[in-house]
Length: 299
Image 1 (cartoon, rainbow, N blue to C red):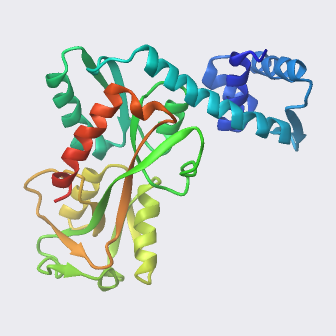
Image 2: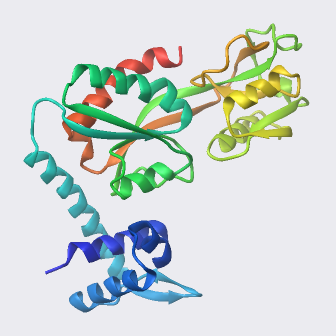
Image 3: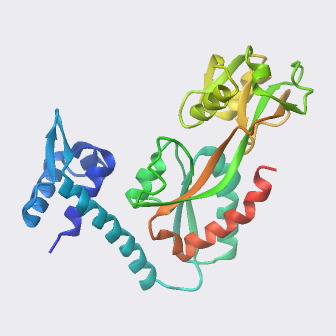
């Protein structure tokens, strides 16, 4: 009989890449996590880890076992759903996403859900990059809005259920006195020789660089920012121009103008749950609210 706790440690090693990182995530010592893997290997009479340089990698037997482990996790999600089956959403619902998604999508969705369902409480966490996938894997969040990125797990990853939510266009943001400010539509190549302000972190930086690359140039970046409103203030002070997603709500009354771009530079936002988690009443209700909100979010 497989000890599911040991199986979860193996899943964590596969997810985080090393025994040490998996142990930290699970609040184990490295030696305790290693012991769990060794005992699982003895139980099954197979090798699960093999040396690779200074670290280890999963053996083919471990990879095969993981496919079953991911299926077991999805079935467990379904079992919890069956045991708690109720018509009305109830209990805590934990949601996460990047700053713009929290501000424009998740915050109003949480307010609507808590007004509509007396037994439902929503807890929101702002995250960056691929952190949502770690939180989902660890069971610390139930539903996340994530940006599509090459750094994300593949769409076919058996641990997660990722579905398109919306395409968020990028606008060129310039000072209101800039020569390009009066244009209704602009090709990014027209701004190739400008000073640029760009995100410092992925995935937003990847989207901006990709859009400029597709327009045939590499932007001359003079300033970096983490927050879209910081970027907007830099533009307002005539320090450069920037691509900013339409979903980002910028500080009002700044002397800046958004100009729409040809070629539809955009980022895709996805909803993501653990495999099997999308059918939970609270998650399903949140997804319904998100779909209702999307048409007006990036108008």
